Image (cartoon, rainbow, N blue to C red; front, side, top):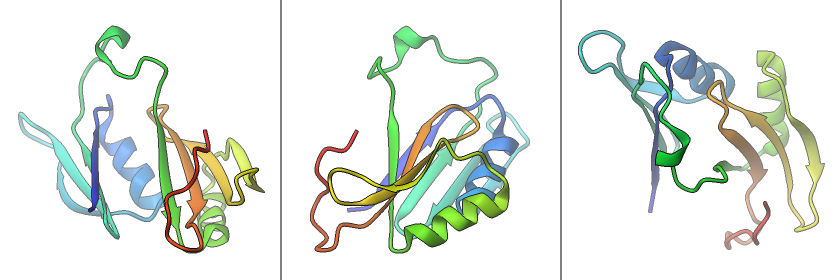
Length: 131
């Protein structure tokens, strides 16, 4: 299984810049002009589709109503933390050990999505509910 998700920001360029410069994704499709601007960003087995919307979608049309946390599992969480620090992007929660046994750090993307970057579980099993 692979993962693909889409975000619908107001600003395509800012979102593409964040995912490519801060998180190391590659833009495999970038069409900022025309009637349907779109970008497809890829890193390993994760693909992020970006389709701008001129106005925010009303909260009552989104699910779940309490929000979303995007979790990226990486082989070297320290290298990822250095990448984000070097980019100058603000870190919401510094790299730390969590009660469930893994280390992670947290940032927000330019659209407010909460992003947790965590080390992979040692045995490849699913991570316990972390929150």
